[in-house]
Each structure stands twice: as structure tokens, then as C-alpha cells.
Image (cartoon, rainbow, N blue to C red; front, side, top):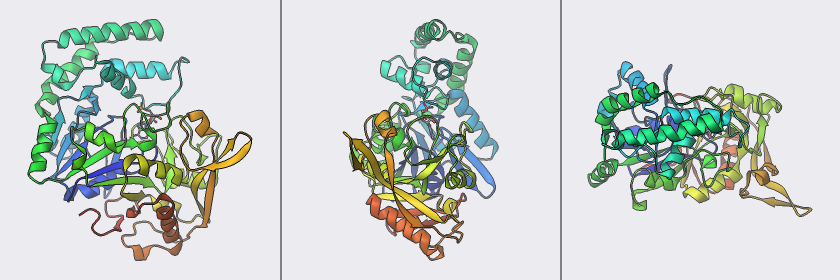
Length: 439
Ligand code: IMP
């Protein structure tokens, strides 16, 4: 197997966990490169549901080395709880997992600031996951962040004191919120020192040694391209780069290390939190389109991390083409096709109608501001749906003609082949379409 970057190319929640778990047995290494506990990657094996937040989705496979790279932000208490949960289920995580000592830590003050901001009228409401992701990445850029490597350094006390002073001022004076609890901080640091340091290493050295041995690496993205800090619907984005370039910087590798870039997308679209979503049909509140409700109900569209209802809408090919350009996507994995079963009509967004100085014009790219994007009206290609079930299909021959037409249209309007199809939640519900793509 070559090296594959596998990333979400909508607004997250595309079903990356399942696809990565499926590819993992053929890979030597699965590596996370950005994000943190805001991610929720769900794996279904029979009736067993595993939700991973920090740990790479290859962890259930005994010969796969799992790696967390320098581009991620880690919440020590949550990571340890995740490790303990897996160990209790018989997975020897400590034997399979290595963590970069350059990872930034999410401290209690980051979660407090995230909550204070979201609960305040100051600034823009983003609808974050509340995990402290934004503040942790801000501190990384501001060069006051605490990394795993700092936990054994002599400068740790001064670093913690400086951060507490800064955050107490911000929390109390600006947000009129509670100060940081020094006991909670001490607990996090002690736990991380006692248990996480033993799992750290220089991940760049490790991965380069693996490459020299001919190992294949699967780079596992979190969130999706439309939540990318630079290329997403700013400011309604996460605070990391979720796109293919980050796979390299987030692990310390060069561009030559990549053979394929797999873009993972649902057969429809979802979004959690605030921000524009042109093909939106349903939000459980003001928008109540029945097709969107079917997507939410049948697709069980609730956040794996926050439990929030996800907004749903039609597949938007303009979003996918944007992702193809910014990531160099070479193949698509389409998930949750079965959720559209039984719909009389299905639609694919192909572009947007905009008001160009009093004249209507159609664009097929993403405007740079959220305001302009929110004004875009989707243009649709409408097709007959299919009444037959595609649930659990494992062979192309089992798909009805309506579903085949839908997939062919996706390939045509997105300009890349569909190489993998997921037809249900279980590991076995999959069709690999392009022989050799993963070779
Ligand atoms: P944050 O990453 O918690 O700062 O949240 C910023 C935005 O990204 C919010 O709209 C979140 O709902 C969204 N977001 C973050 N992580 C995920 C994810 O894993 N799936 C879907 N949306 C996410």
C-alpha cells in the first residue's frame, strides 16, 4: 500500500472513522495530524460502537501503529479516559500508540474561555464543541502554549503561572466569569506527567524510520475542508487547517510522502454549529423539509462529541469541487448512500445563483466571506430517486439504477472517481469500486 491522506471534505462528520478503520488493516501506520477532542470518529463492529476523539481510528487493529502528531491539541484527562475505555475493552492501547512530544495541551483554562466566549454577547457565536480547541491553538500561535515536552522541563512552573495570570485576567475582568481552579490544573499536569509522557516520542523520527522500512501511512484528518481555518466558511470554522497540507506539517513530513488523497463525503450534507450552509433543508427548528428530516432521522445525525442535532441538506458539488482543488483529491469515498433510499427525488447542488450588481449570475466557487456565502442560492440538478434498499450492499450489482445514476452524476460534477462506497454503519457495509486505487 502507498501512503494515503484520508480527509473529510464537507463540514465534518462524513464517516471518516469507519473508512479509516476499513483501510487500516492494509496500512502499517495510522496518524492523526490536527484537531483534538472536538473530533468524534465512530466505529461500528457488530453491535459494538466505539467513539474516538483523539486516538487514530486504526487502534482496533493489532498490527497497526497509531500516531498522534504535533499538529493536534490534546486534552490529557479526556485522552486518558479514552485510553482507559479502550483498555477496559481489551485493546492494548499503550502498545499501539505513540504521541508527539510537540503536541499542545488543552488546559482547563482553554475550556473555560471557550465556554465563556460562547456564552457571552461579545464576539461572534460560532457554536463550537466547547472543548477549548480555539483557545489552545491561539496559545500555540502566541507561543505561550504548553506542550507535552514541557511537562518534564524546568520552565514548567513559570509557564503555568504565566498562563494562569493571563487567563484569570481575561476570564474575570473581560468575561466576568470564574477564575481558573489551580487544583484542576495541578491534577491535569500530574496525570499527564505520570501517564502520557511514557507514550511520547519524536514522531517525525519514528515516521521517517517507518518510511525507510517501506511502511505505508494513512494520514487521518478530523473535521472537514469547509471547517478549515483558511479555506472554510471563516469565521465559522475550527481553529486548525483540516486540509491535506496540514497532514504534512502536522506530522513533520514532506510532499513526496503522499500517494493518494481520499476525500470522504456523505451522499448528502450536514453541518453542526453556526455558519452558512446553502443546500440546507432541515435544522430541527425553523427549517423542516421532509427530505432533510429523513436525512437527520435515518442518518442519526447527532454529534458524536456534543450530542447536538446536525443540520442537514443536499449534496453540494460546489463544496466538493472546492475541496478537490484545495486538497488535490484523487478519489472520493461516499458514505451513507442508504440514507437516501426511498426518496422520490434526489438533488445535487451544482453551483450558486448570486446577485451580481443587479444581474443574476451563477458561480461554482465559494465566496470568501460568510455574509456573501449566506446569500448564495443553490442551483440543483434534480433526479429521480430509488425505492429499493441499498442498506448493507457489498457489490455494485446490488445497487438500483437510481442510485447508480446519482453516483455517476456525482463523479461527473465533481470531476473525480468514486472509489469507495459505504452503505451502512458496519465495517462490512462497503463497496470498493476502483481496483488498484488503494494499492
Ligand atoms: P471547535 O472546533 O470546537 O472550535 O468548533 C468550531 C466549529 O467547528 C463549530 O461549528 C463546530 O460544530 C465545528 N466542529 C468542530 N469539530 C467538529 C467535528 O468533528 N465535526 C463536525 N463539526 C465540528
